[in-house]
Amino acid sequence: MVRVRRRANGFFRDFKEFALQGNVMDLAIAVIIGTAFGRIVTSFVEDVIMPLINPLVAVTGEDWRTITVGTGIRIGSFLGSIVDFMIIALIIFLAVRALQRFKRREEVVEETALPDPNVLAQERLTGALDRLTETLESRDTKVL
Image (cartoon, rainbow, N blue to C red; front, side, top):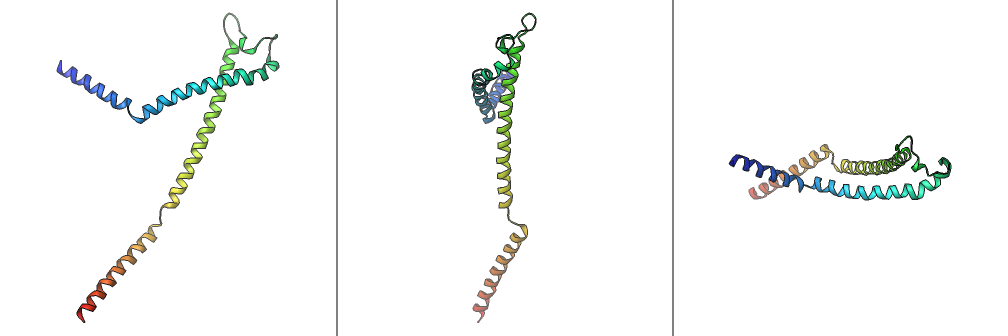
């Protein structure tokens, strides 16, 4: 019984650490923002894009999102979801591409910031020679 309780406490402790990590919190925030963004895109498609496209693809004067095939297969709704997906995918692609460009710029800045190892070695040697020269000069003055 004690072993089961320890396992349960260990499990809950591990779960608590996992749930409170930054990655899980970031994921939760992303899901919430993604849900809101999905609603915005759906509204954009239904209220802005589709009124422009409907006259071109309307079948017998109906809105193309209400088209059904057979009994209950809503092909128009499915096609509308595909349009929503394509818009979201395009926006995510553009966002990821912009982030990658930003990361590349950061990497270039970091790479240029690294000094040349030969220059560092020369500076160390010069500093060591200066200290050695000072030490020898201070001994020479003490002897005289």
